[in-house]
Image 1 (cartoon, rainbow, N blue to C red):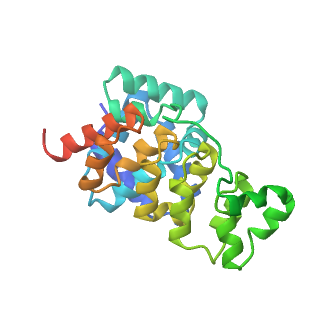
Image 2: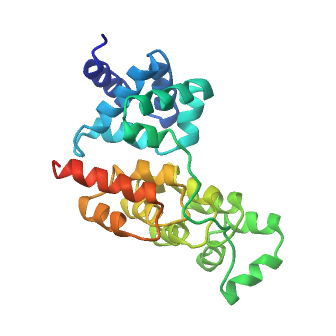
Amino acid sequence: MPDIEAMAARILSDLSALPEEKMRLDLLGRRLSALEPGDAAKLIDTVYKKGADDKEARRFRALLVNPEGLRKALGEDRHRSIYHASVQLGLRKVSRLFTDLPPRKTGVAGYEKEEEAKMEFITLGQRRAMSKSNVKDTIDRLLSDPDVMVVNNLLNNPRLTEKEVLKIASKRPNSAQILKLVSTHRVWSKRYEVKKALILNPYTPPRISIALLELMLTQDLKLVAEDKTLHSQVKLSAKDLLNEREGK
């Protein structure tokens, strides 16, 4: 029988030595794929049971926020087999991470305010070019744009501030694709308030919200658990995590 604790410790150590997320995801995919599906599920569960102050475990958990990244690193067949193993073993936290559920609410990004609606009459090519502008007023008017490339350009724009990113992350309605973009951005996804805004947005895919819950303070988990606008699985996950932290 493999020593899951020892393997988890070795993976965490090896991941911490790599500088880029893609490299860490590739390594994680290779290591998990080399294990039996049940052992891979147990290893993930072992890491998720580590304390919130464990930096290496937090880095591991942050990798699993991006569902596409994990699926690509593992391959479809291995991803499916680990999911089935986690269900059979009763590892609910792991099985939720391997399940893509539709958001509690669905919608598309778009301009709503009268002063912003004029942007819809500007061609997509022009809006994409404008999203690279260093003019603050231009950036503000594009925050509700429905085009993923426009939003991606905005997120990479050095003039963008956390205040504006929070407007994108908390916008309702919003498209799942844009919210995924924010949740995996190399800079903004690391900001606590951005993570919190994504979780509290019922248009965020539940799989992303569930992964982000592990990075939340207890006081914010309580908000999530009581929020009637959120997906039931997100609320259940928050309650389970609260019970774990309270030793129940």
